[in-house]
Image (cartoon, protein in one colour):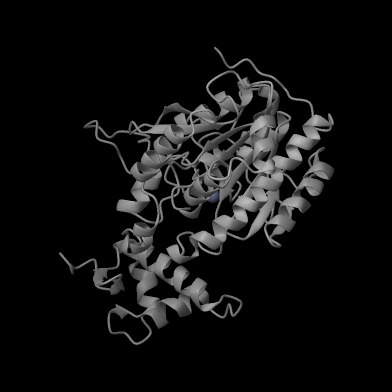
Length: 410
Ligand SMILES: [Zn+2]
């Protein structure tokens, strides 16, 4: 099944020679400068990297391999070096067993394919009520293809539990109630590991054809689906003037097209993954901060993303962000709006509810060589620990914004 009429270009992926999928045949034609039907690494690099001389060799190779996997519609061979969903599950079960005083495991809900959205509650006296402490949430893998964001939460958990008797960790365990969700989007994550490395959304089928079979409209961008249910905050999910179901007035970073990579979903909070997180965060008034892990960019971001306006908490973000930046050995720190506004994001929704939210865009590609896991996750963990310490102190001093408390029991 290597070559058929629609698949005339080939490339190497790991140790195999594979076909370029039909969707990329025009790109392949352009990239195949010597016209031999085979895309060698030089040809792909020229197209992917262009003249970007700032990338070092390893990063360049990672981006080339990611692009080749994407063109073939196949998993990236780097998957073997990252935790599968099942391996992650096994690891957190072992951690919970080894540290019963400090860890409580909880499933926040199930995905459309039936996987658990696992959370570890980490705190001294974890089996009991710890809701009087500073509540903080760390989330990995909203976006399926961002593999490093699964490794980073696990590293943070190990850094705390494997060294739990240090004075710093004793203080964190005593003062904070830390919720760590290593994989928010397990269905999408497994899909990128086994089928299509470039998938970003969850895997919920959105429509069926006349025969009741799911169509190609699958999945919602989980970081475009946030809405807290408050009508006054609707503008953060859908900007004023944007017509539901119409793609002509979409902002470029958020779409009403179910086949788009940045589809916002049929309504805000429609996805089980997003609902599970909002239920945890908004119904517990002690939750004061969220760290949302994404890749890539080596940048720490703070709200807003839906507008160029600054959050009323901007001064606090810059102060805490500086500490995180120093701990990460110098990542950039900036407001998340960037070039284009995006709506329905976790950070803006949390901020409006009085929950400080940083987004960490780690690394320099989506699925880098697993050799880079220790260095990248070390930087993320250090930066996250700085966040935890700052939040504990600020809460103690009464300097955090007031929480908006919503009743999500209905
Ligand atoms: Zn992301």
